[in-house]
Length: 353
Image 1 (spheres, one colour):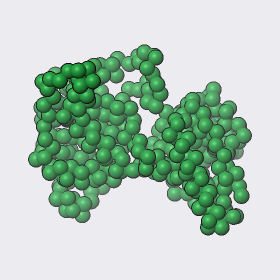
Image 2 (cartoon, rainbow, N blue to C red; image 1 turned 90 degrees about the vertical axis):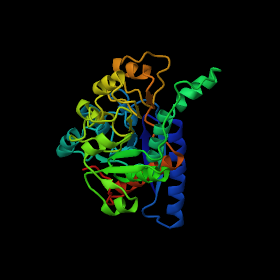
Image 3 (tube, one colour; image 1 turned 60 degrees about the horizontal axis):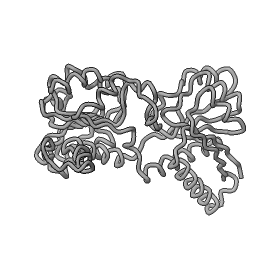
Image 4 (spheres, rainbow, N blue to C red; image 1 turned 90 degrees about the horizontal axis):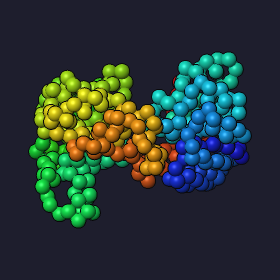
């Protein structure tokens, strides 16, 4: 049996719990199937801090580092990891923008072989359900009602929302998550408009919805939901030009990458009343790497972040759309399977090339 030593960075209590459970399940399955020659034993060390040039030496005597979205693998960090004998960087996340793949290619060209693996997707149901919940909370002012009730204020002035039934919902990015959300909205009795680079006519027929261009989405939707990936073409897909096409009562919900929205244009639209409100699960200009950490004792020095927080028609959460028990177990299981395959020299479909 091979022992694989993994150093986790940016670790939260739920990471420890789910990875320990996933490892027990994986090791038990291997034993049951008598895969003695390929079986592994995982040994974990969990570090709360982010992976940086300062913390990277903590990876000494490990085979793998496991990181999350806020950990930055620069060329300097990668060189330290290689010097410490690290063979795999395992991202327990989908995005790889926090890893300098060019630097790793250069390092590998010289001598070492540092592999990078990731989780190809999160649970579409976790993210879709969260997005719909965000829309409901924003639309029906649930967060305001809770704050009032907690403070003993029982007036309903300013809490009037609208029904989703009979409204039009625009889904930008009708991939797995967008499709799951579309089905939920059809259950509400809404008209759903779909937009995707790769259209699925059979799905459109299944839920009686059309694929339309972005202009039609912006013009006709009461609620606009962003599920598209961040690529060059989608950066600031919500900008001043498209906002000018939207209904005055439109609400925007973004659980995708933050740079899908131009924050300055959004602030102008919210201040001027050109749209009704916005909700998102991550902040575009997050210079302090706020998400995942406790900043309560410290000032948050970001002007746009503070402006958005003060607006009554904005709902912000902190990168938690994926955060369900089921999804965390899926992330842990896929991550450990990725590591095992690479360490055993097997083909791994989630290897970042």
